[in-house]
Amino acid sequence: MQKQAEPPCGRLTGAPVRRRGRVLENAIFEATLGCLADSGYAWLTMEGVAAAAQTGKAALYRRWSSKEELVLDALRACLPPAGPAPDTGSLRADLVELLTRMRAAMLSEPGAAARAVINEADRERARAVLELVLARVVDPTARLITEVLARGVARGEVRPEAVTPLVVDVAPALMLYRAKLGLGASSGSGAEAIVDEVLLPIVRP
Amino acid sequence: MQKQAEPPCGRLTGAPVRRRGRVLENAIFEATLGCLADSGYAWLTMEGVAAAAQTGKAALYRRWSSKEELVLDALRACLPPAGPAPDTGSLRADLVELLTRMRAAMLSEPGAAARAVINEADRERARAVLELVLARVVDPTARLITEVLARGVARGEVRPEAVTPLVVDVAPALMLYRAKLGLGASSGSGAEAIVDEVLLPIVRP
DNA sequence: ATTCTAGTGAACGTCGTCGTTCACTCCCAG
DNA sequence: CTGGGAGTGAACGACGACGTTCACTAGAAT
Image (cartoon, chains in turn purple, orange, blue, cyan):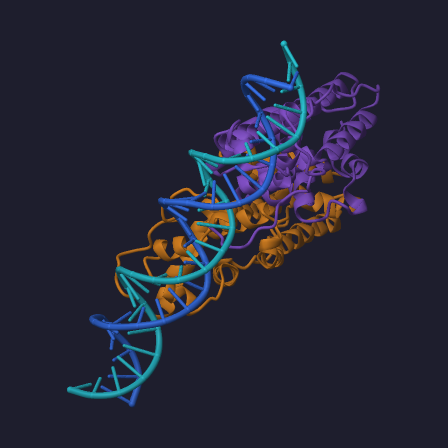
């Protein structure tokens, strides 16, 4: 593989004090997600994670026999639950709240790690990791949006035929795309803009 | 990096016959794009490309001093021009034709290679490569969609305020997202579905 | 205080890849 | 036909990362 000298990825997670058990595992998980977010799955190495967590490889290999197992466990431990769908009584407010939450999650470290995995989705090497992210992030996202839209249908704010898998995917797709193209920070792609310019026009009766 | 034994990526490009000059370069480019599409930028190696092109590393290094240079040249040589915007007189027909073209391009090997690059967009290692793909694929895509929508505005088929960068990004974002999640082959995400379920509802007056 | 176990840091042998070199050969142009 | 340059396949030394081992030590539990 690439022969570049790789600095430790992610951020160093604290003073070099001997840690044990759960404390050490949490530091390793944090380092793992940092490496994932910074460098993606392909470039993540056990040596890099160990260095970022300020521990030794032996401590990693005592727990996980492979990089994939480590990444799976780190994601399982750190990916937040999706939470309930907003129910404010207004479609626009629901969507803004939901997309604001999605956006914050996407910009968090676990979110950035999940994004890195999605970006390498067609890699056979990360199949199980991708499936975890699909189950824990992508599918719940689609469900929440579907739920909010369905409530809108019941209130007459949403055309019933607008609730399709394609429409449900628009917001996450846009957020990921804009983030990838480095446009995530611009004022044009906040939650309100996506709701007002894209989602509400799509679903309006 | 990952210590797996890597089979040659991409497809072998022909009989092991000595080739020279342009012929060899084209075989190398094809092998490069194949490796990009199959494995992405991170996992692409000079050794792998050389093996896939059935040539020697020396032949590669005589021309390109780095993996990045090689990938840049391969993409420059093989990414097709965007072509003109469709102008059928009907917004829907224009959009369907344009998105059909985009989809075909996306499923082609150069398109798959470009996709791999976009997916690693936040990688500092592929910055120049990403910029090439932005300039040759992403920006022209946005321009074509903008042009088609502007024509629709002139014909009264499109709300003028609907022509925003966000709206312009919806179709490519969706296509990439669905392709990444392995939903590209389903009947629900062809060009017509995206036009009818998403784009036309967004822009309708 | 003692015991036990997990953590540490270093070292190891192995492998894949890098970038380079080289002897030989092909093949094109004159 | 000849010369020159590009291509071939193999080999090389170096390096990063892998997965493993080990002597020592910290620190928790008793």
